[in-house]
Length: 131
Length: 385
Ligand SMILES: [Zn+2]
Image (cartoon, rainbow over all chains, first blue to last red):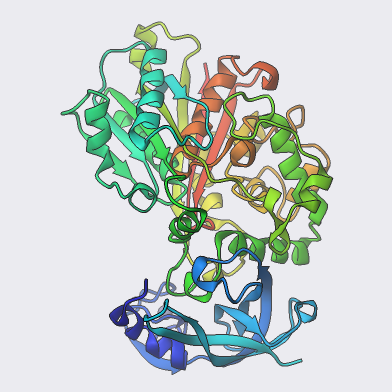
């Protein structure tokens, strides 16, 4: 169960793709971190991830977690964004047959799911095909 | 560092054990190990369990199990590293004896997974992935391994049939293991016709949900010799490494870096190379996992794991038999117990008690156990003296 406080603190990443760019080596951490895993520097600037990229891998989830049962089957991919950062996201608005590794995609703001009858509605990023 | 030996093993039939509780299945395995070792003393114990809390609403099981085993007040610790919890317990037991703190240690693993619904079990297993950046988007464990499989097929030309061959081989081995949850053979066709779970992975590419426990007794080699154990079975290498738990954060999602690094440490400590290993028990939670693991352990070149299965190199009579016990696929995968059960198989093989699945003249063997999609990995090397 996702509580409001747990949901709220991830909003900058989920709504705006905010990441931390290392001021020393330029490595981009998504989500942001307190220490750079590449050079151990602790100073970052906040940047927004590039919202376009390509499919690095994908699958179709046919046996979903309970909270996603009304959506099934749905596609999930690892998306390599143009700035080199990889994220995991659903790939929507497409026929599964269209999916291929290497295809161009764009990341958009979408509803992810609702937490039960009275729980919060969860939003975030999903990918759509550009070609 | 003192040399460490294994003098007792215990494991009972795995499966959906609805009539037995977590404490019962663990104590049964522990008592078997103690009887097998023929000792009346344990200095400490380590227990691998991924999520007794989510699976049975019971935490604090280290003390619970020490109490029910009748060995309290000895020190007892539960360790957790998702599906690698058992391997981690083994390493802690090894360190405890090697360092001189304890002389006799019980290492166990347990998971009671059928007290919750399949949905509940799926949720509990999912906690081994990144909750906020993987599970949040609706991915499952089969889904994450499917992403690895798809990328491996794309990059190296690994085929759908080669994935199926891993399951077929492990079921063939498991059909000769009376303790396995699913001790029967399957065909490539059975795998390819089983329902899709997460493309390209099908139901028979996945290890099952299992109730089970395993336990072993470790002591110094000096004590094992004094007890006139024959053969003397030593742990000669131990390696442990970590990686990002989010699959997408890795440079190459087809490469199990933590397994490679843990293996490197274990090979160095044991002064062995992949060519020295006679057989191995590895973490085939999904068919693609075994293919990637055999590459990361250095048994085959990068990208050649699929081809190796197809050529029969990993079969019971192959160049390097992988998962003679039936692996997680056929034997079952009670997550915290898996890493310990792998050692049970090594010992049975070394003692030549493996029945129809016996590998001849094996002297050096290896276990590899990993958590999540490979965010943690443990590799151990064993020698029969
Ligand atoms: Zn940096």
